[in-house]
Structure formats: C-alpha cells, structure tokens
Amino acid sequence: MAGINYVTAEGLKALKDEIARLEGVERPKVIQQIAEARDKGDLSENAEYDAAKEAQSHLESKIAQLKLTLANTRILDESKIDTTQVQILTKVTIRNTKTKAQMTYSIVPESEANLKLGKISVNTPIAQGLLGKKVGDTADVKVPSGIMTFEIVDITLS
View: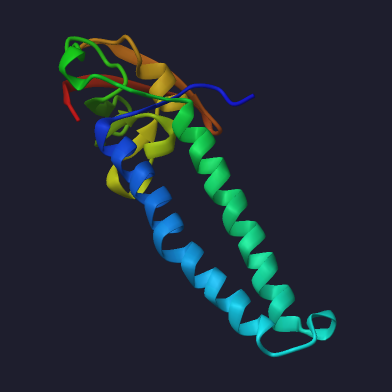
C-alpha cells in the first residue's frame, strides 16, 4: 500500500496534467503503432507489434502508478504556513557558521524536490535538522563529512 503524498496545489496540477498527457497523447500514439504493426501481417513474427505492445504495457503501468499516487495525495494549505519557524513550504536562508557561506532553500514535499531550483525534500538531513528552528537559532546537521552548524538567517513562504 502506498503512503500519503503531500503536494502543493501546483504539484497536484502537474500530476493531473501528466496523467492527462499520457492518456490523451501518448496512449493514442501507442494504439496507432499497434494498429499499424497489426496491418503488416503475421503477428507471430512481427517485432514492431511486440515492441508496440510492450510500450503499451509500460505506458499503462505508468498511468496506473500515477493514478495511485494521485489517489493518495493530499494538498498542503500554504495559507496556514507559520513563518516563525522552519517547516515544509517555507524558504529558509541559512549561514554556515564555519565558512560564513549563505544558502537559501525551500523545504518541499519529496515529490517536488529539485536541488537546481533550491528546493530540498523535507526528508533530507539538512531539512530535518532545520525543521522547527527559528530565526537566530543554530542547527547542527549531520552530513557525510561530519557535523555542520547552520544559523537560521531568514524564514519566508516558498
């Protein structure tokens, strides 16, 4: 059984859009490929037919998985986010107390994480170490190279 997935309204829309694209665009393409391969004759020795049927199987599996994810998804209400402390859907600016390097991350559900965009999963060690902290607090975060200490500089909405 799948667990509950938490997403923003934007994440929910992206999930629904992907399902619609797969069902409305990709599924008809695969059905067309199967029909064209079937028209070529003997199915027992038709590699194109076998490939198209396998593609259909993968596509239907992906659609089913996305629909299961959608069924187990709950929307996070951004209007109820408290920015006095670090929590999911907040953007936190931290400063490494040793190097003085400053970084800003948005704490997001795992399904929306994208490090290139500065979005880290709430399940990462850094996010876990920051959760519940307030501006001015320090957080000791265990990373592969040891313990890093960060000062919370600012907390805003993502």
